[in-house]
Image (cartoon, rainbow, N blue to C red; front, side):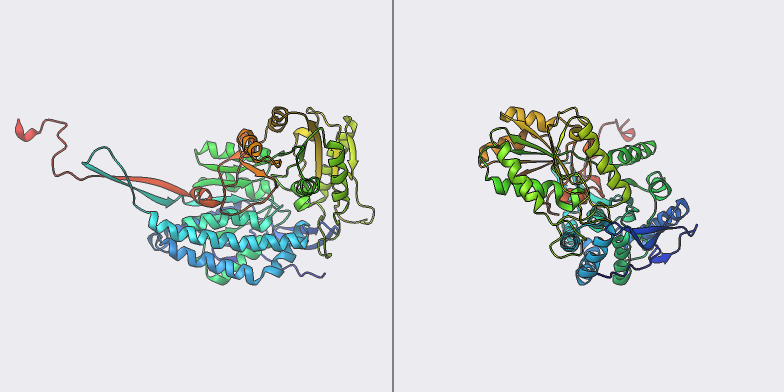
Length: 504
């Protein structure tokens, strides 16, 4: 399928601008390894322009154009963006698939979610108006107090390549709903649809400087943004724990807030009372959806010892039935990983597991019918110990490792034996047990009898080394709001703490 990749520049102050140093980066189709276009490569000089544009956007007309405008005014722009995204859904989905390698059906679903997320935050922006001046109950009748929710200011947003436009939207939509001005830096590995979002914003007349989009490398564009003194919320970041640590350190120098959604090594516990086929499909989906490149992937299977043999037989059959192909082929359910570097990294994890004594039960190699592209068969690894790299570290590819348990306590101990705490799943027909296990899983998100569903109305985020802060839902909006207390003395009587000079 021929897909024309638009040639774009940086989006700064409502206009397309060539990078100051005129550098560009190639776009590589991960399914063919061919160069299909290029993106502008921003540097610190471009970051300066974008931050200045964002600051102007907030102060223009004393803030009345955006920051202090009614939430209902901002909601109109968010709804207009949602409508344009829906109008261009087919085109945007194709660009997403060719850029990051995810199956076209998945990409269509993502773009629908993008539109839905903008609509949802349009509703919340309108709701903000009613929440202003919310009264605070005080113990003294001589005082009245209320709360204002105000935009935090200029925000930096750094997003990953596995859900390029959707992850950007998780940050852009609430930040704009709150009245902030934003600078978005998407991953250099998949930036096409984020640049198309800039075109959508231009078409709907979003005020200049409210959203600026800089593509480019992390050290050259992301780092200057993360340490810029004129960014009020230093960064809302989704990505690796290592990069998250650097961003946190940069923000700490200026005592500025960050929210971090980092890696994961999430467990899925399968008890002995399950429907084997239903559980096998959710297990496969939980790890192999989005080509295995999900921070919340339930990539550690913890299965009851009484059913392990039969369950793994079923799981292998489900896995071998997954269609691996170019993302544009009908029925594709697993495409390539995003880049050559990621492909080599995934294969190295698999070879290390083997050398450490684990067994590759299924997959672990390039599919025979695909000679080009960064494809890896969905992989199931058994005979794993808890000290192995494959059990402890995030692969970010279609690789599932397996351990067994005999008691609920043992399952929980295995599940929680990780530095991460993003997602977790439990599959059992005993709902009381599911409830008990859910409470004891050390994760920000728990799925019961499923894995990976995500809704923009519900909070998303983790604990431990998976980061802190919550995206989506009302919690996502709160990330971009500052709370101000206003308290008034309402008595006609003087305060009377000091002796009055007039009575001496």
